[in-house]
Amino acid sequence: MKKFYIETFGCQMNAHDSEKVIVTLVGEGYSQVPTVDEADLVLYNTCSIRDKAEQKVYARIQDFKRRKDKIVGVLGCVAQQEGEKIFERAPHVSLVAGSASYNLLPQMLVQIEAGNRRVTGLSLDTEDTFEVPYTKRDNPHKAFLTIIEGCSKSCAYCVVPMTRGPERSRTSASVLTEARQLVEDGYSEITLLGQNVNSYLDPSETRLDFAMLLRRIGKIDGLKRVRFTTSHPRDFVKEIVDAVDENPVLCNHIHLPVQSGSTDVLNRMQRLYTRDEYMRRIEWMKNARREITITSDIIVGFPGETEEDFEQTLRLLDEVQYDAIFSFKYSQRPNTPALQYADHLSEEEKSRRLTIVQEHQRQIQIPRNAAYIGRVQEVMVDGYNKATQQWLGKSSQHKTIGFSHSAMPGPTADGATLEGSYLDVRVTRSGPNSLAGEAVV
Ligand code: SAH
Ligand code: SF4
Ligand code: F3S
Image (cartoon, rainbow, N blue to C red; front, side, top):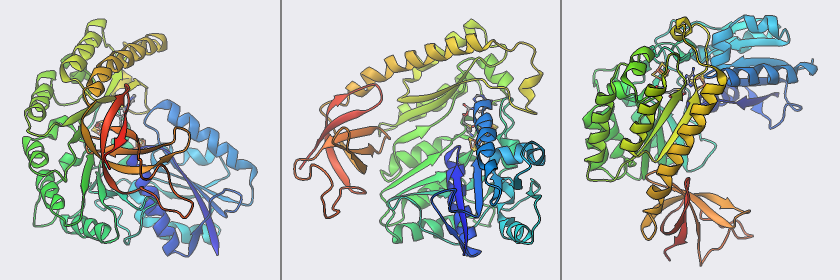
């Protein structure tokens, strides 16, 4: 039996791609092993969103070098971005393939088995999505489900349109069949994935848009929670908020990355919306009957970002009152339009702004989380933390909640656990990033 080992970096799309690559390989007669040592084929699924992520990849590929008996393959966004250059920098690599070519993996494996040591899958010229036979996921309760691949936006800083190719939506029939199958197999939470889920448009005659698809999925019997990520503000329509408002199965948490609070910067980023347009979308969520938590991504130190632009980002955080943000220093990426700008900021200045933005957001989160004290939240249990001796889970709003349970203080010796169950928890304490409480029993 041919054995493979796979390691994955990057976003949820990459994590789920790896799950699909695994199914494909198993279908071709391979079996997965947990260590590099045991493997004949070592696959490395990579991310190139920021320079640091990319540097990590080259370091790790060098680690595999000592093992001459192994075939090494580089997949994902760095593979697509660097292409055949990887063979030059790391001659021990035999396979370089980007996500838009994964449906050709079986053919690529045949070439490798035939002894070819320079196999590539780098075409982005595709209308196909990577469809694999249905399979169980790693987590028995929560599953990812891709609805749209690639990205056809052209944000000036971003490599994704070049690493994942143009947008391709799956048919609603195949999305719904997979969702029903997941529920039948015991999954109660599904996260719909895409770089830009709200650009979803059913390519079949049904022509469902994203809000319509959400409504259909939300009606599947037995499904408890549906999440989705990521939404792009430009294509974010009020029907999405209405759908969430009407159906508690659709989680009341929306990740709507703003990137900057300054319309000038947004223009130069080619984000296709103004600050005011973004704030209108926030209003829809604030006016919903359900309490929707909102999270975001922020880039600080984009070329030409003045102190005044940066202040506007801080003011936007005050106005929106996000429940969490992911913030990054702008990182120069190959072949992106932003490289042309003359006014790049120093690393020190970017670091200074990053620290300020993170501390500012922390001060917003402390009182927001404290407001949950005394309230009961439904928690889906993810597991038990031995160090803190607490069960851990997430609310529909995607808050992390640690809690104690008087009848079941921890997993028992015979394997009984609360993992995967939904419990009411009364919140008794809060911090900037999480809540804590006691299960209502
Ligand atoms: N498709 C999603 C996000 C994909 S990447 C969207 O449009 O929101 C995730 C996040 O990484 C982005 O939201 C952005 O904040 C950050 N990012 C992307 N390229 C970056 C770069 N060159 N430098 C720093 N951060 C970047
Ligand atoms: Fe990148 Fe913009 Fe596409 Fe998101 S929408 S993946 S930030 S180009
Ligand atoms: Fe990274 Fe590619 Fe995802 S660059 S963030 S793995 S789309």
